[in-house]
Amino acid sequence: MGNDGDLAARAARQEKLLEASYALHQSLNLDELLVLLLDVASSAVLADRGTVYILDEDGQSLWSRVLSGDESLEIRLPIGDGLAGAVAASGETLCLSDAYDDPRFNRSWDEKSGYRTREVLCAPIKDRDGKLVGVFQLLNKQGDGGFNQDDTEFLEGLSVHAALAIENAQLHTHALEKERYDREVALAQQVQRNLQPESYEKTFGSVSLAGLNELCEDASGDYYDCVVELPSGKVAVAIGDVSGHGLQAALVMAATRAYVRAFVQTTESLARVVTLLNDALVPDLHGGRFLTFFAALIDPVTGAVEWCNAGHNPPRLRRAGDGQVTELNATDPILGILDGRDYRAGEPFTLEPGDALLLYTDGVTEARNAAADLMGEEHLTDLFRQVEDGTAVEMLDSLRRSVLRFTESVPVDDDLTMIVVRRASDA
Image (tube, rainbow, N blue to C red; front, side, top):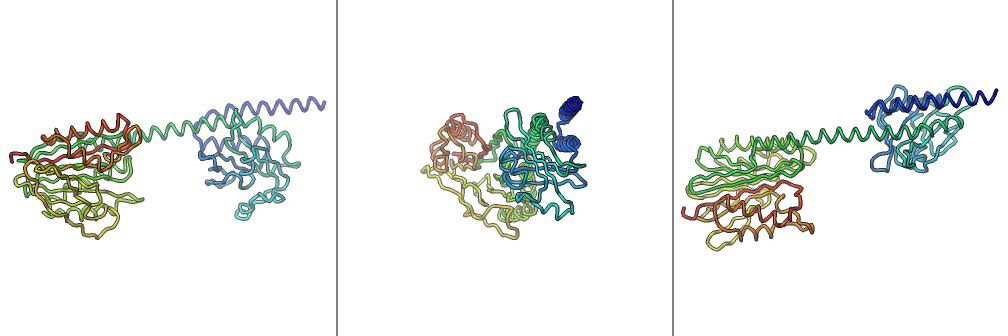
């Protein structure tokens, strides 16, 4: 009769395992799954409450957002700390008749809640290959006798089913995150393409301009613009780089474009434009974000150039007479960090007939070849010095080909943004 009773109990446990396995694979939502896992494990072994921990992606800690009772919060536990951390480290089941007798037990949870933990059954959750996925921690067996061997065997049987369900839910979560990220990148790229073309070419009197912005696979905050309808008749050219990537950087770029286009219509002072831009960006940029920025006002009749450089890569000025290349170094720091600062203009100069000006972002100088060598500032200067004279678009296209030859078709991890401004030789 005793054997019949044991067989019946085992059959009931096996049926419960099958039911649990089916139930666990009905949800791909990780939070819902953790609640379900805790309910299944607690009801099967008659635990009063407990926690299901998941191994973090870093492999160094456990976390859970499930705590039975009325509370639900996120818990993080380093591997090796506490009872669950000890089980995660050893991979062995732990069964205690009184948790307070084990120095690894953290009593602070009981002290905060007024709950008294007595029995603890703590078991690893492992996949088919024996790899740790998480930990069951169940507290206080209902009724008399405490947790027993049957309870331990049930959790061991549940472990593989639980691990598979957790891994499926994690894969689903990662797929959803990837899909959301892809949508964000597509939206960011659409924002950029709507506001600044992939290529630009225009001539104003004796001055021609050409620009390009080739996005890498991830959208970023590179910005270039040319404002042609200024009251003074001058042409405003601007280039900038928002720190970071993604939709937020693209939106900062869009805001910068709007601010610049508005401010250059209201004042003849380029320094004032940059000061106003900084004050407008400071309240909007958080978490260490900032903008490097260069702008120039060019008189298409005389070639006179006013400019400001707020922490941006120094543009290159190539003189037609002797081929000398000079840099327009930063006159002030980056934008969006400190408000109330007055920005200054650099020393004005004149684009003489045949002179050319190169503006670019760090995606150019930080491009790498197959040997992981950087393009660098000096190499770019040499390329600009040696590029064959021509229209702005011809010179820009030649520089682009030179950069691509240097990278040896290695995919770039940042935008490629450049502008060439050239004054005609016969001006």
